[in-house]
Length: 148
Image (cartoon, rainbow, N blue to C red; front, side, top):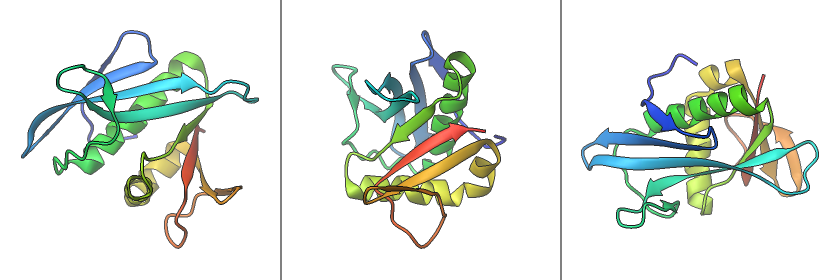
């Protein structure tokens, strides 16, 4: 993907750290991949959020609104590619901590669809059915992503 993104750091290719830069300052972000037990084929959960300023633990409920959503989402997508480079092309599951956050992720995916669709297969969950992601017309409950 040739999108503007932030540089990120990782020690184990399962946890990533980067900094959002914007009007609210420099905000530490975390992306963590965790294998979902008993899935075949293997599926990894993607957890994303701000690092709590005191504990450093991922907080997926905070709304930082640093006006850099597309750069942040491109950075998260890039961590997926790096994760796959190291662990293989597994399915990655992503869901917002709230319905509105899931919708925000969907809007970000739709806005970057041309670039994302070049490198990734994307599926959306609607009810109990996984469908090929369509950028508009359906509100999804979660997403599955796999690098092509």
